Length: 173
Image (cartoon, rainbow, N blue to C red; front, side):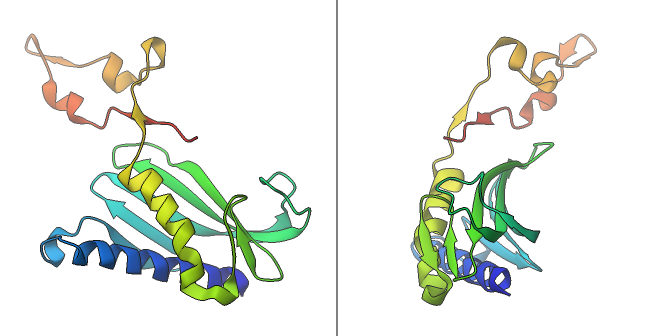
C-alpha cells in the first residue's frame, strides 16, 4: 500500500510541475514543453526525445546495496531514462520506501505523510538532471554505436537520413 501511495504522490508532483512549466510561458496545451502521463503503477515524463519512466518494483527486499543503507527491508520504485531512438533504458534512480513511510534515494529523504509537497525536491532534481540539463557526451573511437560508425551508401552517396537518429550518449554522475 505504501508504494502505491508513493507513486501516486510522485505522479501528482510530476503533473503539477509540468502544469507549472506550461503556465510560465508555453503557448497552449498543444505545445507543452514537458508532459507527465500517469499509468497503472507508472509515471511517464516526456520532453521531445527525452523520456523518464518511474515504476513500482514488485516485492520487498533488503536495502543493503543502496546508498546510505539502513539495513532494513523496503519496497522500491525505479526510474529509467532513455532517448526516443534508444534501444534500451538506463536505470537512473532507485527510491526505497520503508515501513515507517520514509522514502529515499540515498540523498533526499521525505515521508509519505508529507504528501505531494514532500516529493517536489526529488522530482525537481530528477527532471532538472534528465529533462532540462541532460549531460550528453560523444563517444570516442570503437565505442561509437554501429548506426554512426557505419553509414549506408545509396547510389554512391551517404544516406543522410540514417544519421538523423539520436547520436548522443549521456553520463549519470
